[in-house]
Length: 166
Length: 324
Image (cartoon, rainbow over all chains, first blue to last red; front, top):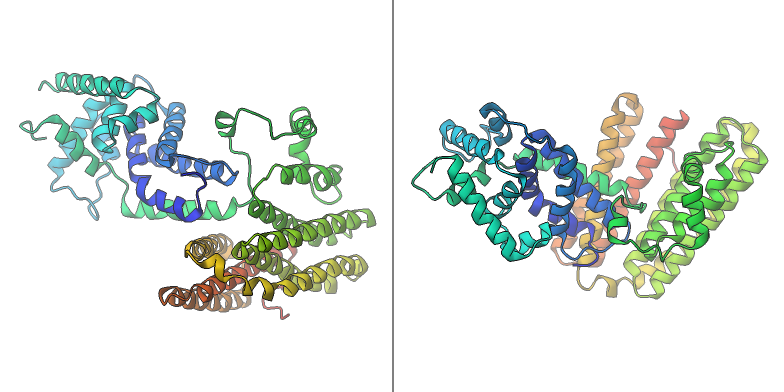
C-alpha cells in the first residue's frame, strides 16, 4: 500500500470500522469502550501516516493497533451477565437487522459463553468467523504461523461447544 | 440459537448483531475527518518507535535538543511573545521540527502553519504592546517561513506537481489575506503599536503579492497534474474535511458569536456551499481543472473564514465582514 492519502484512509474507515469495532467488542465486552478504542485506533493510525510513515497492509495495522490498545482496557477474569452482553449487542429498533428479541437473547448467550474462553481463543473466533478473515491474514495480525492459527481455531470451537454443552 | 446449525454459522450470524449503528459510524467518520483536518502538521506518532527504531534521520544536534532538553522543548512550544522561551521556539524548536519533515508537501504545510501561528501570536501580543525585540523576532520568523513556502511552491511546480504547488500557494495566500484584515483592525484599535503593526503588515502584503505573482503560472501548468483524477479527489476530500472542521468549530463557538457576525458567517458559508456545488458539477461533467480550482477556492474561503472567526473571538475585534 505504501503512502496513504486522506481519501484512501476515509475509505478504509468506511470499510473496516465495523470489523475493528467488533474485534474490540469481543475483547472488552463493553460497547462504549469498544467504540472509543476503535476510534482511537483509526486516529492513531492516521497520526502515524501523517508523520510520513508508510503502511504496507492498512487492515492488519489497524487490527494490531486496536489489539495493543485493548490490552490496556481489558478486565481479566470478569464474568458478564446477559444484560451486559445485550448492551454490547446494541439492539436498536431503528436499524437492527435481527428478527426478534429472542434473537438478541440468543446472541447475548452465545457472547456470554465466548467471554468465558481464553483471550487467544476469543480472538481467533472473532477474526475468523465474525470478521471473515482468512487464516494467513489472522496470522499476520497475531504474528503467528498459519498452521498455528488453524489449530487454535479448531481448539477454540471445541472448547466453545463443550461450554455450551453441544 | 439454532442448535441444529453448526456453531460456526451461529458465530458468523453473531457478527450481524455486534455492529456499529448507522448513526455511530457516521458520527465516528465526522470525528475522524475533523481530526484529520487538524493534524496536517505532522507529529511524531507514539507508535513511530515501534516501526522505525533507527534514529538515523536525527542529527546529533536534534537528538541533544529532544533527549536532554525534553522538558524545555515542550515548554518552549507552548510559549507566547514575551515568555522567556519564545525565542527558543522560533529559532530552535520549530526549525528542528521542520527539519524532521522529509515530504516537501508536508514541510510546506508546516511552514504555512508557522506563518498562521506567528501572525496570531503577534495580533494577541499587540493587546499588550509588544517590545521591539519581540516584533523583530516575529518579523524574522515570518519572513523565513514565507520565503520557505515561496521556494517550496516553486520547487513543487518545477517538479511537475502543479496541483500541490497551487494548493500550497492558495493556502499561504488565504492565511496572509485573512491576517492582513486582522492587522488593519488591530492597528485602528491600538494606535500605540501602529509602527510595529505596519512593519509586520509589510511582510504580509509582500507575501500576498509574491503568491499572486506565481498563481497564474501554476494554474497554467495544472493540466498534467490532474490527468489521473486523483488530485481532484484529494482536493475534494480536503475541502470537505475542512468544511466539517469549520462546522464543528462554529458549533462549539456558537454561543459567543453575535447576531451580526452570524449573518456574515451565513453569507460566507452560502458562497462556500455554492462553490462546492459548482465544483461537484464540474467534476461530474469531467472538467477536472475547473473542479479542482473550485474546490481550492472553497477551501481558501473556509480557511479565511475560520481565521477571521478566531481573530474576532481572541482579539475582541469586529473582523468578520471587513472588506478587502
